[in-house]
Length: 234
Length: 265
Image 1: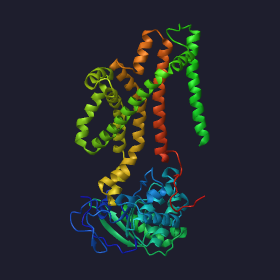
Image 2 (image 1 turned 90 degrees about the vertical axis):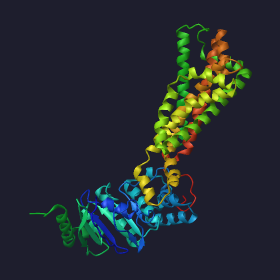
Image 3 (image 1 turned 180 degrees about the horizontal axis):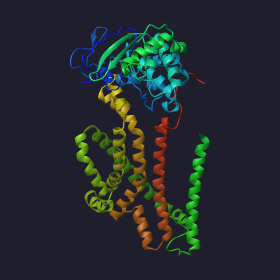
Image 4 (image 1 turned 60 degrees about the horizontal axis):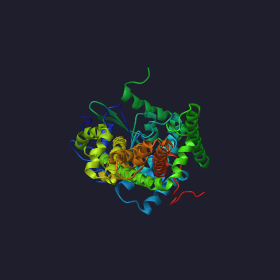
């Protein structure tokens, strides 16, 4: 069993990160929320709707961008719609809209092969947004990017999140990333996987480079690191 | 783009000239007797001199090649898909398919002629027999190697299996499909000629060449070989062009069609 009794409530419109060592059941948790796996007990509710084992209810994005090479940026953004029904003019129109709003307007007709890693992840996030699901599950989406691109992407993600008013559940190994992005950080432990701490991050938004070096930020960071690795420092 | 095409054409022309030059050099400097091997120009002269006879035969061989190729391609795709979808069938069929390719095709030609007569039938079967195998293997490979995470993502997004198949698996198999088709295209004409040889009656390129050989007319023998080769090359080039057209994402940065939105420059 990857995950022991776990109860989790997420406020609509909030940004919640989950950090924890490998094997703490983060992925199992996502698989259950997305409907891929059936929990041994209990249920998954979105807006009081029971979505246990029902797929197609949330947006999902992984570390791999999973863009299909034969579809353009526009084609990849509409892939989710294409996978469930016939594409309408509206689907395309809306895809164009979000692509333009979030800085991909010049690349609509590019094939993924022509894009950098950061751009590809942007497209993947747009694809996740395009489906209009209230809840987005992001599983280490920036794990494969270099530090510089990563920071740009984090700020970009925050602006997308603020504008689109979605709820985000975000898995990461990176404590800085979790604190920087989130309203709440859940710390999980392994064997058995469970939530050991639930920290509300009370940092002003919009967050900037300065946030990363503030005392409050570091306070949160060491609190989380202590949970993950035992005491930090001398 | 244009200049790359030009360079490719130029390269092909150069390799043609090179081969003809080597041929010419061997015959002239080796003092090869004309009844053993002609000079290139004599071979061309032999076929242009008897063109009214050769042209219908060429068309006939081309027809055998094309029909057989199409039959083999369809069969190959169907096998590839079925074997991908039904794992048990794959275990049963795979050894059989390998056996079909292990049988020397020449040994198969004679009984096929007995069964199917002297017309198109046996030639189509032989060509299809040769062509379907690389197609099946490549299509199966393409379908098998679709990223598992992508299929998981499709499931999370709520896609039904057949839609995932159409939208993700089929396009993913297109590039491998063309690899198989190209291999098949080079072998197809060989199959047609083997079929014609086995029939040993009626009129065909293979028999024309056989008779020329019996008459010690080396120029016509080599000339006929040139025609057969030309059929093979033409068909291969057609498939390559088709591939070029069908897989724009492998060579272009942007899609050609601009249906909606975007900045039109």
